[in-house]
Image (cartoon, rainbow, N blue to C red; front, side, top):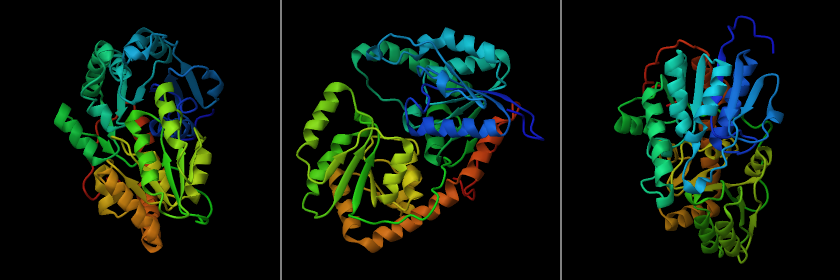
Amino acid sequence: MAPVVGVNPVRIAIVTEHHCEDAVGGAEYRMYLIAQSLAKLGHLVYYVCTSPNVRGWSSEQVHVIPLKTRTFSQRFGKNYFLYRAGLLRVLERIRPEVIYQSVACAFTGIAASYAKKNGCRMVWHVASEGDICPEPSVPFRAALFNYIDRRWTEYGIRSADTIIGQARYQDQLLYDRYGRRCDLIVGTPQPAPEGPIVKTGPVTVLWVANLKPLKQPEIFLRVVRDLEDCQGLRFIMIGRPAYRSYQRRLEREMVALRGFTYMGEQPLDCVNLILARSHILVNTSVYEGFPCTFIQAWFRRVPVVSLNVDPDDVLKTRQLGFHSRSVEGLVRDIRRLVDDEGLRDAMGTRALQYARSHHSMNPNMTQITTLLASPHSTSRPWPTMADKNC
């Protein structure tokens, strides 16, 4: 791809666990958008990950480089430190001026150690609360691998030249645990839908996430049961199936539910189309970063009802939905939105306005790409309270 006039091409390596074609999560989709935006500006972009068969996803603009898969089972814990030699070999070939890493794991520390040794800049982007505050307990068989992985991760966080955050609460967690601050806090950019959003049909309550214990899909199934007395409601669950025994248990619970549909994993475009026709999005995760599903919903005038997650209290203070804090609260708040169309529409309208002002593609992506495309950039000042992206 020919460089854009006036742009000095920078060699940038994006290092993470998965490509979004292999694992469609919020962080993976954000990195995909960043890679495409950098490439369109004429920079040399390399996407390094563990996803198999990724060469087919390479393009003239973004070169996807797979690391040789380590077959050691993750039943014994996070094994990303086993990729150290392979990752360092790939970075030696690329010779990046900037490394961008997100989703904290041993890759964070390995990339930081390469950057320090070779004089390039390391940028780390917080993906979730779990990046900063890991789970306090893990199965005994996973303790050793997770300990090694966490030591690499902590080294990477402490050694990163620049840290990007999604919300102010992440900045405070980072300071409390590591004595560091985010150098840039920027809203996660999302493409806005084209055309009008028209809500028709029965009131639809949607849940979107991978089916794993962290996301607590069983709580949504309980909510569906508790709302069976609401006539005409439609419930939809979307997400990649879980590991075998957990998935079987969930599917047994799904069988008897009335007005409920489990659609399995769906491509992003399909999820957005369903969101555009939905009326309420439910989140039951233990923790998140700044969920992309929230932003996708807000752009489509869908209020969010969340069990635990309310980054920077935006649901509460901006009235974009409800932070329920309990299962009983989830049921109560969903019922309230189902029964009050005026409240639902008002929250949806505010949600769209918030998404446009805080998560539009151009201004937010420009902040990120400008920072990444400056190989010798110094840390930026922490944004003030007046910054609309905070």
